[in-house]
Length: 68
Image (cartoon, rainbow, N blue to C red; front, side):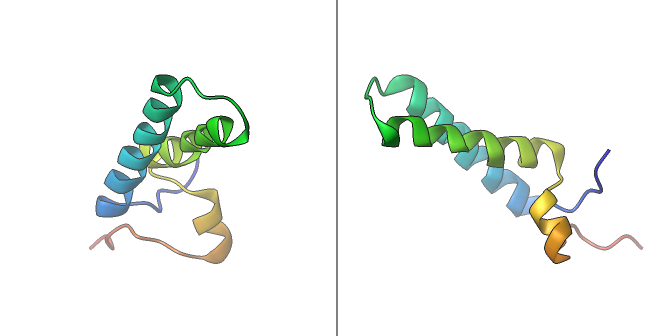
């Protein structure tokens, strides 16, 4: 569907940060804006799992190793 443009360490960091934010959201029973702002973790988790970032495509960035 999307071109693969997220690779290696970038992908691992996105998955870890996204999962941590979502875990924090579900474990913390707070209320208000900052509690719901943790749902932004969906974005790095999804882009890490798909190995594709639409923002990277827009700015022409690619962290995948080059194919030989």
